[in-house]
Image (cartoon, rainbow, N blue to C red; front, top):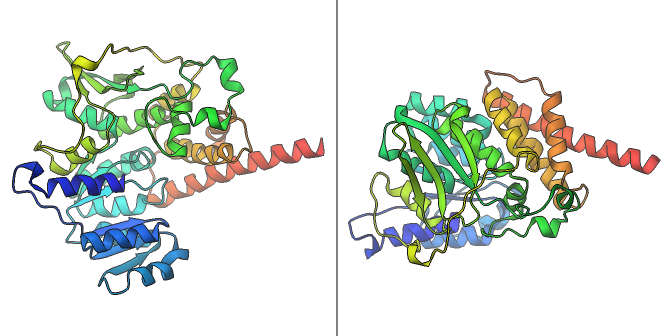
Length: 386
């Protein structure tokens, strides 16, 4: 996401955009990719760089020596970046809740938040949207489906929307039976038919947890009741999402699977300018198909709708339990179907809090992760003693 964002900025700062647009990269961050971070800081003349894994601070200091850049470290470094006066737009794609404090800090400062990952709105949707309203900031979605919805909603007023329809590729197991899914291997789960994504997101697509998280995200981002949100399987991944209005009109946002387009739209909103995203050629499309998802096969999706209705800390527990379970699956310690079982177990044990602070959200997150690992340890102990 970061590399694509810099590609988009390069294009916008060139003659490609066709107008006087200039974007300055003030700050950059990474978790452990110190060589790339130092290289980018040098190329874009960044004033601040943050490394969240403190084990790499010394190496980064060596690589960035002489650049005149201020080095920040840990999650606190991200918070400092989010609060910088010279920053107008904060593009965030930090996996998990590690960047949540920084997003809320930027929101309090009234920044424009270009959000590429699901966690801020899933884990802290109510708190984040409330903070943005109070500060006069703005949230612009970069996640392809929510960017599509946001673009489609420009065709009418919010009170004229009758349905929001999220599309889903269906992931690696869209054509598998329940019995076949029960025997799924890590390699099979990582074989996404459309998108080239990292392991975590690809597994989320296979379970359809990603779409469950997007339902929760849409509920807060667009301030709509869960009953107005639907999901359709769309294998071609050309229609990124749709909005139906009360008069029966359905507005769809279409395009090739390319993250550069939603990144650019968030950076240039409300304008549209020429960019580097590949254009869609309609005459080359043979068909566009849509189908309702099998809620029995993809139990995570049904669970996501329930969590979206429940609200409060249920969503952060859902997300954290999934992250911990996916980690265990990728390590080969649990079966694929066990991912959803562990999420369900966590939710059944959790006492939901409706009004919560950042600290309470992080506590619920840590609790869910520990519950997953505790359950797996107990299962291993039982199998070895038996």
